[in-house]
Amino acid sequence: MKLKTLSTAIILATVPMTGAFAAAMDRSGQSIAAFLQPGNYFEAGISALDPDVSGQTNVTNQNTGDMAGDYYFPSAALKFQPTSKFSVGLIYDQPFGADAEYTSSTMFTSPTGNTKVEVDTQNLALIFGFQPTVNWNIYGGGVYQTVKGNVELQGTAYSGTASPSTGFAGYKANIGEDSATGWLAGVAYQIPEIALKASLTYRSEIEHSVNIQESSTGTNLAALPVPGLINLNANQGSTDITTPQSVNLDFQTGIMADTVAFANVRWVEWSKFAIRPYAFGRASAAIGPAVGQPNGFDLVAYSDDQISATVGVGRKLSEQWAGNVSVGWDSGAGNPVSTLGPTEGYWNVGLGLQFSPAPNYFIAGGVKYFWLGDAKAQSGAQFGTPNTVANFEDNDALAYGLKIGYRF
Image 1 (cartoon, one colour):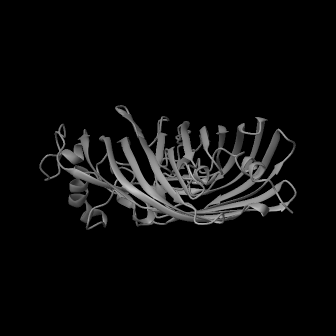
Image 2 (cartoon, rainbow, N blue to C red):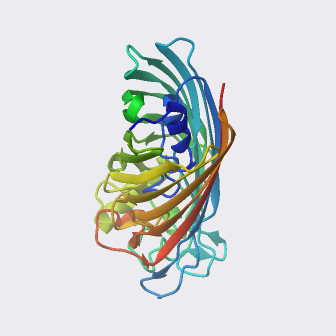
Image 3 (cartoon, rainbow, N blue to C red):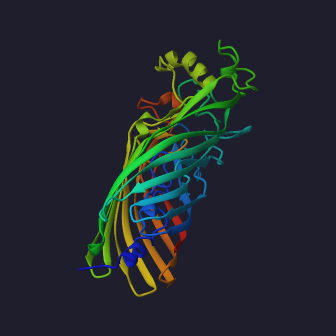
């Protein structure tokens, strides 16, 4: 059975979102597929997520309300094939992020504010590929990344009333935008006549050193014998934030006329990721021995690496229409989890549809429904212990995506 290369490439472009609601702060899935398209190629897309995440607090048994914010993230790619053996491309995406806020009157809110977090990253990858034969593609390049965010902790979950006496209610951290560089490398193998393509891509961790503006209105923090924690109105020291390394394995093959099966497996090393702002770290080191954390504790950390997988089938329905269906699974990054992102993995199903007015361009849309994994949530001071402050169960999310592609 043979499939035309162009038709196959179009079939597999019908789902414009991959990660959307993955473990920890994973969002885009960091796909390399656009760079592996034949010839000269451009695409631009946007994905939006509408999650519904709520739970019950342990001590007061209050409902937290929906604490997960809606968000969207764009992506774009441009690839040139100047010769049969060399290619170059640019890929832009927003690989990691967080958007959450507790607005109901619970252990995570206070008269002075709500517990909330917002983290945004942007990646721009410049990739060069070498194709020694029609079957092989060896590629690599540099990655420029920016990161920024802010965190605010409020309520009794952080004051000591319902959890270890950490006294971090009223703590705020503003992470100013910082940039750093990393790299990626990979290899792909294809047999165009049967629509077979496999690729393995590694992305390095990226190390940031940022100045975080910290402040606190917490009375317990003000009483600590740690200089500089009462009036945190100036940067006191740099904080290291390292976004994780990852590996993506992608595979597709024709299974009958105008039909392909595809799969993606992704690993992300979240177990080594942590954020411990400078002044927060000094305070946690002072408090730590009293709560069983002799070396202090992090603002955010994860215990496990993430593994996710998606499998599906795509089919060309006519000369202008194509579609696909997919099923996805994500392991999560450990349980208990941070109160700033209280879900553990997911299952999802997805549908994609594409319209191609002409052979060289298309418009694609897709939707995915997520069953989010139940999780027990804990504060940073409780990390590594069985202690928790809330349970989150029976949550879900809906993701939408739109993408355009053009071959020239």
